[in-house]
Length: 218
Length: 278
Ligand SMILES: Nc1ncnc2c1ncn2[C@@H]1O[C@H](COP(=O)(O)OP(=O)(O)OP(=O)(O)O)[C@@H](O)[C@H]1O
Ligand SMILES: [Mg+2]
Image (cartoon, rainbow over all chains, first blue to last red; front, side, top):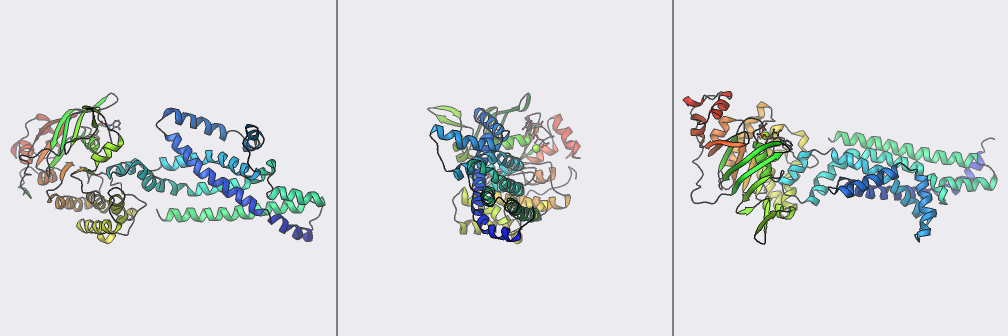
């Protein structure tokens, strides 16, 4: 099979039409992961043994089962319990939950990297526990983990084609649809690959620059 | 330095007559597991009084300060701050363990300067001084800023207001840390070896600042230090800790020149102070 430039250019607009779906799924899932991940990190650090133990178990369970299985579960099994969502919403939630377990560990590492003396100075100045977290600890905890977070965002982005499995029409499934109309798959699938390559590579360069900037300011 | 040096006291002793203690440790004990660090220690601090705490490593000096700053909870005993229980609160005439809300109310009277400064690295010097007055005391930004700058002026750091702490020397950081504690206007200020993490060249500037603020008799000061001449210069009273107890306490001249206990004599000898001939 040879590469047909004309065909490739013809289908490009149709492919890019669904790029916003892929981007939305990525950013949406990442937002869920950022918020839920912080919640999990707090729960894991709780002095309540039960809460921290249960959280630990749940995090381990989600981390060690395939995200694809989790998506299937949300999409096909949850409706039987009366919970229905659009495919995209399910995808955002499923990927978000999966990645929250990774981000919770990243948050934990960030929080642990803040010196004990920072907590003590904050206590000595009589900050409330909430103020300590928001003003003193988290700003210091998050700074060094921003590059790691960025890399998780890129990984998450590259995993969005799996949403095809739960009928979300994102880039790869659009390529499949276009290909099935003309029985030519080389161009659409290759274009999708290039799309992911360009954005991932661009984002990784940004993360690198961010990392350097964060280090300079130390 | 030697014990025969004549040292000018900057001030007379604190006028404590007829005043209630601002801090009262009552039979305070602290254990870490098997290790009994403090054993039923009694210590009173009077308003405006300056008490230096000396003693060998591991004798429990830092632990005393940390209990008062609520960084560590006593195993037994009571601490009173300005007439209120710190670690306990009265419920139906009984003393029960205090919650964070109660600690927050009482803790406001106490400030602390740490050995390793612990400035907030993500804030400029000025922000370090403004954050707590604004967030904790509800001061306006303008007022907090004005007072922060005045305090920085006092410790000679006003030119560094917009710098981040990482850019400063140890001595400069410690002066900022002192100013940060002062803008909260505590009734009692704790210093835990404020110069022992510093390069020798910068020790002097920090001790000068502490002496300067000690002139103001509003605030009581508890100074844990290994700098004997500093303790002698600044303290109204020195308490000697050893093995989790106060072995001896009294005015500097008396304590440093005529130690009663053998332990203190030995301790002072190690600092080159020949106790008995002072
Ligand atoms: N959190 C802790 N857990 C276990 N042991 C502790 C803890 N904090 C202090 N200790 C121990 O308690 C003892 C007293 O410590 P403390 O820091 O009060 O001594 P110090 O008089 O301040 O000594 P130094 O002059 O070395 O600062 C030491 O043996 C120390 O190892
Ligand atoms: Mg100590």
